[in-house]
Length: 314
Image 1 (spheres, helix red, strand yellow):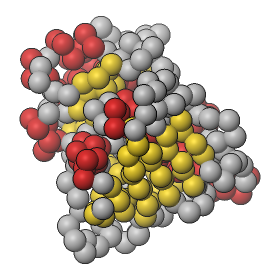
Image 2 (cartoon, helix red, strand yellow):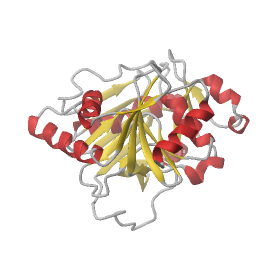
Image 3 (spheres, one colour):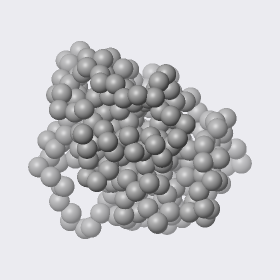
Image 4 (tube, one colour):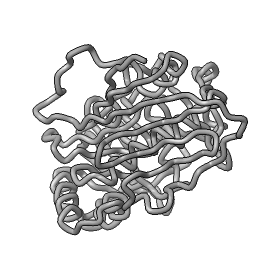
């Protein structure tokens, strides 16, 4: 088996994979990093060792729990879809995937349920990383984090920005590496989870690879090459938007209010009070330099994008 190196959510990934699974890795991570590539800035990202082995099974995949029991304390966290599984070792920074050959063409299994979730576990269990339930867009070089309660429309809002010419860094999870002195948040821009009706309404997505998420009203879509030049692995945000449908105005928010709204995100997996304090201090410092607003959505998606641009360029 060959080993290549990739970037994923800001981590370095040393990936060992059999030839049959190379297409899966390409769809997840994109192009390997050049041989001997150095760190992208003054900080050195953690390296995660990901291995994939294939197995034969006649069992159909089933949705696993969002987080397995004891995910925040176990030495090994097992993500199990019955047909395939991933074993995550946070302390050793390893992810071992056992993938059924019948799941090779199922991006919900190897994407949403296994590898994407594994890196979320690694982030939340780390004392030098944390995550936000957020997406991120950049308009003319100015970036915003976008967060909201589930069902408000964050995924549609961020995808529409991409359709309108914005750069896109993710729509569901953004990871922060505290040692990254540039203050960036890292996403997974290669795919999104969208309403199938929205996907169907966009002719440029007609041939994009999409798969429905079981028991959800969303599909996982992999962005076509048309958008490749506007997919960004990270942003340095100048604003944070909290989307709401309670009104259609833009209202400023204090830092403490935003911290309270995001607390369940950045505090997840942080058992040590000193670690949690360090994480909160890092986020507070970053938020203090941002425009923080409650952003009321209208039913006019184009108008929402115009107002986003106005917030970023105010």
